[in-house]
Image 1 (tube, rainbow, N blue to C red):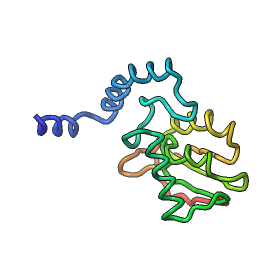
Image 2 (cartoon, rainbow, N blue to C red; image 1 turned 90 degrees about the vertical axis):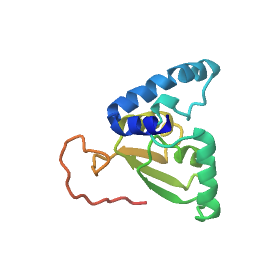
Image 3 (cartoon, helix red, strand yellow; image 1 turned 120 degrees about the vertical axis):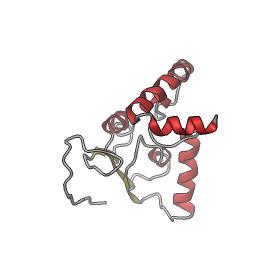
Length: 153
């Protein structure tokens, strides 16, 4: 049985997998909406990277950033491939007014969600769509080009 599921995961196209995931989470998203989901936590059907509890995993990584990486409250953070903001949310309560957070990803839907939920309340948190491509993600334009990243972080 396990082999069969493993095989199915390999042969089902990625867009179909995304639809299946969204459908799977509709009842949970509805229940959390009725119950009152935290404004900075996205619906589960929108989470396209990572597993586990969105908030707990983010908090765990914030601890790593602070204790192992030496992240200070007044730091300027650049995150490449930020997804839907799992690492950004816990930093909203950690970074000081001098701290900044610049993040980008190629998934426009996730970035737009973050821009609407985090940036209005935390103006030093900026989320940008970057139309780049690699073997896993394809550019929306279909054209891969060399780019340089200029960021004053």
